Image (cartoon, rainbow, N blue to C red; front, side):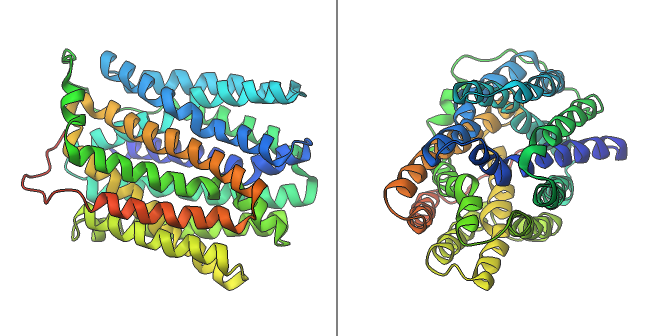
Length: 387
């Protein structure tokens, strides 16, 4: 992968996660300002996950069929940049519901296809362990920059700036998409049933279940963490600092990822991530003191970054060549789609019917179940194949 291509993918990750850094902490606050109640906000925010049930796999199938991921990324980035400004003309709840669904169905393609293109390029020159984290950390830096800048702007000027910032970021993302390139994919006729053969492997099913449970657990964080902090008395800028701290810890892990993944099997890293998740969410639920919440955010290095890197590497054991895009998309569908959707809806129901801390108790329990699932993987008896 040449320096110019690395720059393009780094910029792509930076801008995509800048958008995520706008939506995850502040969309719920924007919808609250619009007068929607907690359940309505939970449903709107669940569109981020619901659209990942069908969207990623559909886009991934198309990419594998056409053997062309980059063109689809460019098309979807441009479409998102055109759809997002519709927010300026929305007033009704149903209007926001449809807008969230359409926008994030389009955006659901970008990360699985961007990840698979990056992984394909890095495995081609045997540099995944060394370079993947260094590229992916730019997404974390983009997230941090957005939550800090947007948090300060919203604190000073109001949440009404949310639509303008989102429009600028997605237009920039569309421009960067035209700088992306990856090595030529081998054009091979798709074989009927080859994906089913992989899915019949019990290790694959346990792995996907663990991913489902991990994102189920994190749904409470993505949907309600900002509201939870707001209820505790923190202002918008302080809320942004908490989010930025978590992602800063994530950046550190990505930077030193090669030292971890070159020494430990991916399964071991995943098991550790699930254990850290149990502790993290229990601390958020039962000890909502500032210093404890800071410690819990630092644990994001384990519950997200370590889990993501190890999971991405482990996927290459089963989903290679013409299955690569669908493998990434399937993981996004099962984890962020099904897991995120059900986790967000369950969190909304618990928040409304019980007390806020119980949302994070549910998350700790889900992380424990994820750890039990990954323990079912059989010892590896064959080498990791390159795509």
